[in-house]
Length: 273
Image: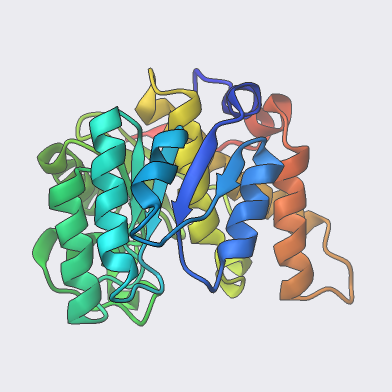
């Protein structure tokens, strides 16, 4: 990775507008603060365009979408696109219901996000209009493994190329691509799936990274995907004998707060494929 993403975010301190879900909104705000960015959450259609205009980036997360927030997401996305701001779409649960799938696809085509970050089942639902998501989790049959990595990478390249975006799928093995270059990331811990919101946090951090390093979008997204995985590894190393997933959640945010370029480089497990 050729970009010092930790330093870039802290130097820029970007204001990131997050239209996100109420399950994880507090953790999303805190991880942005831990990284040196500044969060703002506004989802009323009457103000989202005005708020977006104040910001450096936008994260749209459909985790708890409803009839009020859907038009707010689209309006904010269009405004950000018009202003040249990076937009990140997190299609939480796409494929689990018709409303989620159609909403995510509408945003994809109308807003034209800079980056899409989700699990493999969500990305497949975006690409095909149907899916087999297990609630908001990836279906086991879709999981990216060493055995199907080449096939998954080809699919992700095609998706990113078609939609002119950076595509990042996260799971046991992460894939990040701009449609041409493609990287596999093997950072993180399986226990991160026992903490609600690590994906939501990563999507918000992706918006912050793109705002801070807009000249190198692929590298910025790759670096922040690695950073979140590294934070999960460091947090797990710091777990005590009586700690559980609540402690792990806090330690992940603490690890982001304490992250530096040296630590990120030492732990990074990313390779071009």
